[in-house]
Length: 266
Image (cartoon, rainbow, N blue to C red; front, side):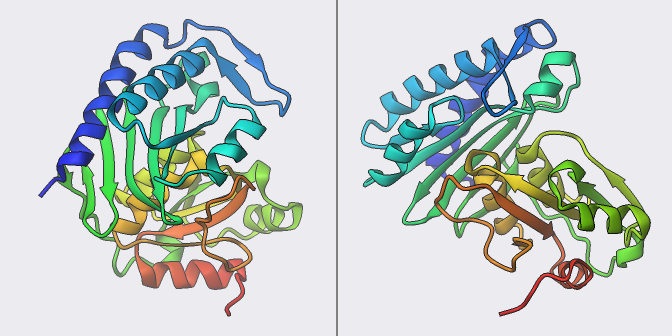
């Protein structure tokens, strides 16, 4: 059964995304932040709308947004007694700004050091991915149940973000790829969801932030997928430090991917 709290959160996210993003798609100019990433009016408006709506519905819960400054983010994370909302108001801003329809709004509730609820909404496809810890994952309130069992590594399609990988690993992937084909779409939260939905077999990213992956991580987790950092650690930690991530929906396929990537074991 689709949890009532998750439905409330999904309705909130979808409503704001539908109202604020399509009218601005490919119509708002961006500016570069100090880290070189792009921010647009859409990012700022959606973050404020989400912050206001989440506070009204859950006034005791803190919030971390991508467009907050680092000090505000750290303070929210350290003083999240009743949990903390972790939001990316526009994942895939560069795509959004130039008219590439691969972007999303991502929201996760982190409590007791783990995501408890997750919503990733894709306005271009009207697709709402969601999950609740220990209760499952859904696409538009229909359970996600994709299956890649038995897929050979050499027959797979991989989502790879090359620019954030080490030069050595990137060169090895380019020279001797273990998969059949590779894609890079430019929105981390949606990448996790597409792996969970069975649209791609493998995933690899060298450096993603908490708001990029928190919701997507839970959605893949609730589908039975596996993920580790390139150092062999759990991907999710309640920290602002960037994390690498290798993942697959099929656990056996993940082990073969892990071996090829030379991810260490305990």
